Image (tube, rainbow, N blue to C red; front, side):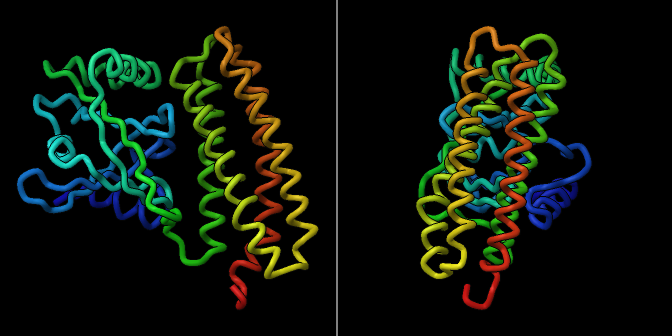
Length: 280
């Protein structure tokens, strides 16, 4: 059973689409549900996470530097298939404990982002495990929302929050662009591309068939996706340079943010009334 603090965080997370206050406010948080190593019961734990290459996310079994690994770590070692709640999305994932140099590189990126991880490591003789969570494709995304329109807005709000986080991280990055910040930016780019590709291939054609009056708006949104793809490519190119200049990255992110915000507002105004209308 979760302790009272974790229970409150879990309840707030689920009630507010992944947003919480307190010590986790403004950070990246997920809920990890594992299967008990001895009991077989489900256990849910709120954890901070880091984006990783290839669509994975990383969590660290720090237990705030306690001498023993946390229970959830023992659970996922015994049962690597886990459930992840990230924002409004819930998905099944495979947990992989990183080893050797891969673990060390990932932990160094975490420390670069937040020195608190180093403080936790200094408190204990154990090596803090770093675990990669990779989504297991199981079909359409499972989104916690009361309606199709609410789901669209919730997904958009997730991108808004991530853009705000990346902008804050760049502003605090100093003269260099750290390895984890590069990955955070690239993960954002990948997520936006995936979202737009899915809309172009699935939702837009479906809405066009059922609501021909939306054709001009859908065509505009497809054109905006193409424009955003160019901006995402420009940001990725700047980030990928070995001597990436944070000022240039910041300028590209600000330009992208302005266009994304404009696009999301237009899309919501056009599509939510239809998605939540009686015909849908």
